[in-house]
Length: 313
Image (cartoon, rainbow, N blue to C red):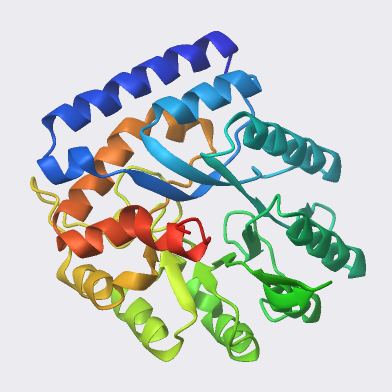
């Protein structure tokens, strides 16, 4: 994507957002979104990216690196994320993650990884751990979710380090087929808040059961829309029925209303094609939120992640 194309895309996206707001219901037009799951993408300068987020209609963004093809590229992602944070300190918040070792397709885990994440958290520059991708179907990663070093990282998320109390969430991508590993990690870290990315691409009944069994488990609903082309059948991926009204499925509504304090909006922006869908994607999620109680909609849109990151003080 060229810089010119990105700038045009940003302008179009901004126009789409404001057009959407003008035509949406009053609640949606006034509802500010805090994106709890977004990735840095490659194209454009840092100024372009700052402008993009400013125009996106997203009040704040929790930002993770994009998929790095090498450790060197991963370091470049981190440097750019930190520059963006400097440009927009009231809007951009950062997650510290673990790169994938391309030689083994496993997370690059070592004692140095734990030390680096500990340093990141103590610095205050990073307010979350993630997105960790131990079991990612598309990336074909095959690191056990309850790997001993990952267990040490989860423990860091809720700990006292050098008289500094750390309490940050862990955003983790675990396919539903590996839910037993996720449960093992949850049971061994009862004081750590886990955010199950994309609600595990699981069905609402399974998500409901997991959230009932594990009070420290949250979900984000990034990717759970009928727009992104992914590995899941669209009927399973989407939160809504395939009708003209895009009616929220009753089982998902049950999850959201029952566990309204532990559900987060997320975009999973990152791949270039998703930026071209961003206006429509935001409109879709605003429509989903319109079908919930006002209190639940506010929590999912921004209230929950604001509280979780301690930004409401």
